[in-house]
Length: 120
Image (cartoon, rainbow, N blue to C red):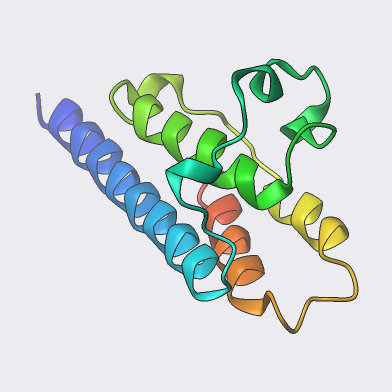
């Protein structure tokens, strides 16, 4: 019984950390001027892309806003479904190469987000 409560507290803490990280990513996107209004949302077909991160149909920051963040809020409803490992910050570092200073807060937020999945 105590073991289950401890496990539940661990899951709860992890979920709270993930929610906090998602908010940090959103804030970094907003402060960098990358957050778009819903009127700028990519069309339905853009989400059907088979290319990783939909890079052939939308900018990476749109993928963060319209795919990554909503998907993880949905996954948090069933924490067992959370992935074991993530590496979105490495994709972002490559995508924003040459603009690292400009997107420093976003890259840092993504790095912290990825770290939550390193030692599950």
